[in-house]
Image (cartoon, rainbow, N blue to C red; front, side, top):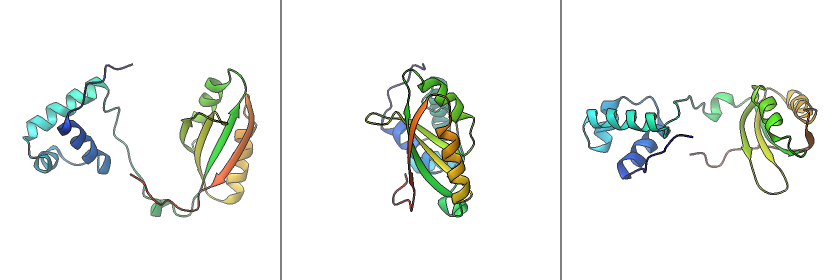
Length: 147
């Protein structure tokens, strides 16, 4: 586990800008933060080394995947089966996010499929994984807030 640094206000503002657009050049970040470009670069390097920035990724807007059917699949795992289920779900590309949660479910998989039929097959596939006792799913109708 990385030794995460304490974040100051500038670090938090820098991370917020990167969440909006991780491709912003250091010069733009510096201008928006009111600090030198070299300061931005050194902060980025420090945050990366410490593990506060684990990587940079692509965020695909909902409009680009409007034809996909998204759902949350809640999973109840058998005793001591969580690690195996997690490993199996990691290999399924339609699983976009996997959350470990408290309450009646052990995991929530956020999934996307090309059609209702493919979603149905995906949910069956998840339910058939070794260690999965039961699944419950909810189809996402719309995203109201995403940050």
